[in-house]
Amino acid sequence: MSKYAELKKRYDSMENVLQYISQRSIALEDEAKKRNNAILKEVTDMVIGKIKEKNQLFRKLYTETFYGGSFYDNLKVGCPDEFDLDLILNMPDVTKPIIWCSDHSGFVYVRLTELSTLAPKEPHEDLKVLLDDTSFLATNKLLCWFEGLITSALNGLPRDAHARTYLDVIRNRSHPDDILRLYIEARKSGPAFTLHLYGKDDSNTDIKLDIDLVPCFKFNETQWSNKYKKFSAKKYKSKTFLVVAKKLKETGSVNTLTINRYWRLSLQEQERELISGNDFQFLKPALRLLKKLRDNDNHKIASYFIKTVFLWKVEKEDSSFWSTSLSVVFMCMLKMYQEYLENKEIPYFWNSNYNLIACLKPCTVTDIANRFQRIINAVEKSVIEDPYLIGKYLLSKEDYATLPTSVPIGKKHGKRKQNTECVNALMTRLSLNDTTDSAPLEQLGFDSETREHYRYLSDRLEEKNKENMQSIMRSLNQQAIDLHDLSLSLKKVDRKMDAILKNHEETNKELAVMNERVSVLEDRFKVTLFNINLPGINDILENLTNHP
Image 1 (cartoon, rainbow, N blue to C red):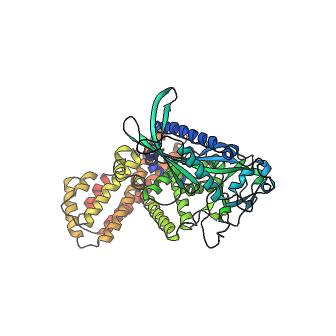
Image 2 (image 1 turned 30 degrees about the vertical axis):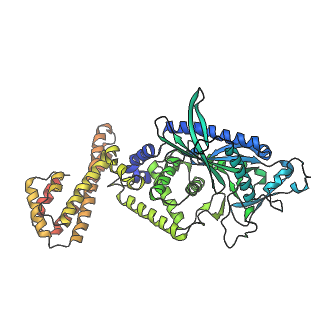
Image 3 (image 1 turned 135 degrees about the horizontal axis):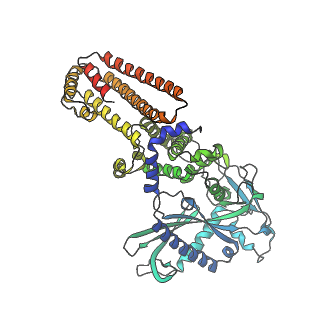
């Protein structure tokens, strides 16, 4: 038996619900993906082409574009309207770049040791525009240089009568006349420059796209520090890594004079390899659900932080875990994520000394951790009685309301839910001392005589402690569920009797044990009711026995 069998059995009731939410509420529309990909290709080719025309240094350094981020990792939630593109620059070997570990985990220094020896007008001498006065690659100088390139490229585009910069995009190469006009603006955001595109399609529907262009430098594995988690050529196809101009947060421990020397490591290709493949069937759906949960509560936690939790689980867990079921993977990862937040630490996967959420306010992290714990508690408490509850935290109120009519949960779980609702309704009526409404008993199949006894019982129970009665009814509810489950088991065994001729003695023993267990539970059931010691209770007992 798999070590995850018990977990799978526990969460099985909400498997269909999570699958439905994953497929219907999170999956991206193919038409939107196709259209936006065409726009993306056209715009980026145009921008990169114009930059190459205008800048010799970019022409020498630029090698390729890496399509990264949630969309290309198949982790995107919602509309495919945000794209992350790394413009990869390659340092010439003649500059002999050296990468040093900085005094802040997760960040490195890059120094061009031979550039100072190059005479003016020699090849690559123009690289000095990206360096500080001690030949360290400087993040502020790279971003300033790149901002000028983007501005220059966009200035070469036409403008309409309202002075808006626009680009006419060919949507279909086989139909050159099929043109879509998009307006384009540039914004600066951290290490990225965002191209904001907007316009309308043929049906007058708004189109909005954001393309983040991030300049970064590529280095090979020989320059990888031994202070970081190793990535060998055998384990990963990619043998290179990137450094990105993501600035270190200014704190008391950072020297403001050298803050522009800190470069953030990026191993997107290796991370993509880690979470991809047939062995990780439910990894990405579960990750998207966690992001959906975050978005629903509007938590300020970066997608990369959530992905990092999954990277650690991949390293620590058997690969069979990811193929168990979506409900198991989702609940286990939600708990792991909550524990990291509770401890106020999500370690960087490539160097565990770097805490990714150290930049967040402790009170903010605590609030999110507590919120997730309440969600976990609620789901664990009602996973059998109400498999739809998880949708409350993943969907809008309108979509959540339609779940019961949209998603089947199986006869067994449905019967349990129906019985629970009936008994809970009865319990509510009793707690409210409503002596006239016997609808819950009608739902359970009781006749008019029994309902009369119920009214009589309700009158007498007005003097009793409401809290104690609720506790008793919960106990009755659980015992009724246990009886129902055992009854199903007996029916299954009975159907197998004809096929088990050689083992009939063992089967009879099994039936005897189960009958004995049923008898014991019935006795307990009767004793519990008898202890209530109120008139009319024996008739209710007889009716409950005749209506399992």
